[in-house]
Image (cartoon, rainbow, N blue to C red; front, side, top):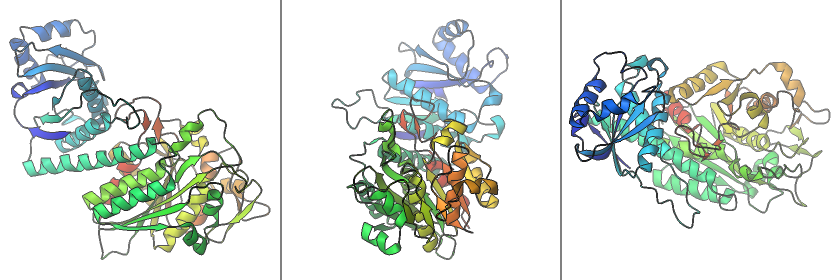
Length: 504
């Protein structure tokens, strides 16, 4: 999709579909606004067609409401979509992103190849033109994502080839830079979505490693991949225990980006990469087990973030670490009751083999410290308890350092990705203590999302760690705003923002 800026009036643009936007109640307020002036001009050309349509709409401007008007050759655009922005006081940058996604899908349905839209949201709640443009570009690319890789007949829905944002003011170079930044981030999210949506027989640990290698070569960033034998040399008993039930070889992917060579700071992004989670010997129910191909969404998010970071080049130092395994039952699989030794030297009693994500992350966090990480953030579809507690609206956060936690949360807020910190009182740690080992890998049902995060903290020690549980947000069962059904790529935009916030 080619994206451009046009500073001229909307009435002059040549396109298949022109998007005009209006706030709820804006017409009834009888105030003179730029959009109302445009509507008046178009209404005259269209012989009062706008007026007639609006009179038939009981609540013009309602959030997400779209009305298609055919111009019948009287304008340079073939169709006009009137988009409702909702109440002015409710508009946010994230709503701009979602509204753009929604209206672009509407434009696709009416066979639009070229689309133009007036910029919206400027000045509302402090939203700047640059922020609005960035959100519109992300919304357009994320909202029109489609995964039809395995369809014998590919989706023949018209692809939007050109998207023009009308009415933006500013220096052309600045506007172009905003578009390019937003495009790179959105494309990185879609790259991760593809990984998440592929089936597990294709997206194996080896395939993830291959994709990471290709990415590193293309972006000229450092790449390393640890084999089973190298993990054994490092004493990664927790990760290897999970991997031993599968014929797929485990991998640890390392991507290192150095944007500030003079700094000793190194931030580790760690992503859970369980390419299929059957539960192992503690086998999951068959219903919805197909969704466990997406248990590598945290790893895909880290890979997507490193893709964007490698292209945007922030002045910070980031290492992405993705432990990749399959968790399968077999004659060689690890068992409930086993006691394993992690890379840190801590021993872990296995209560359930279906609490495997925290095991591979434990060794990955220890390895991140060995690489010199001064702070760590991990993303993982870690617990069903997170979904029970918070649903699918927000990711959960557990942290051992409030300064680092607030930095991560602020980055998430800037991008519109919702995160909510859970309590981490020391009393919760009692649930993961074992009578026969240092730790046990499950603290039971009560506070399950919290105890999983606290388990990981045992391996971070004094290194600042923010754990993000994306179990409820990593996928969606239907199109929702700028997220399409399937993997969402959640976390990528926050990690990229964080990389820029860490610039020195």
